[in-house]
Length: 123
Image (cartoon, rainbow, N blue to C red; front, side, top):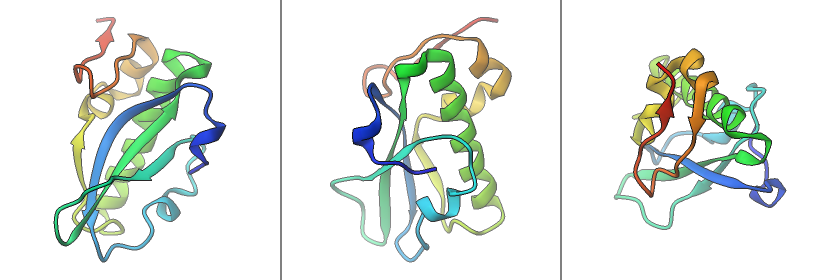
């Protein structure tokens, strides 16, 4: 569920999202997820689109933050695939989705996507 960022003790930017400007409320389409996240409207977006920054709270540990990032991005992809989110695209942060839930649970160290777009995962 989308919560105010000031409730996060350790906000971590994990992904950038793009949707068509005419799309309905992105956060509203994710209200049924059990994960707590924050979507912030980006300062700039290209004409016809909205960009959002996806934050999770890393205060509960790196593994929990990775699982949350994976869960929220997976739900967004699901909604995009069914047409509920129009022209959905992950701008950065795909590694959280690609590692799968098992990989997210094994995540050792998180890095903000603005630093290196990398995460270390046990193999």
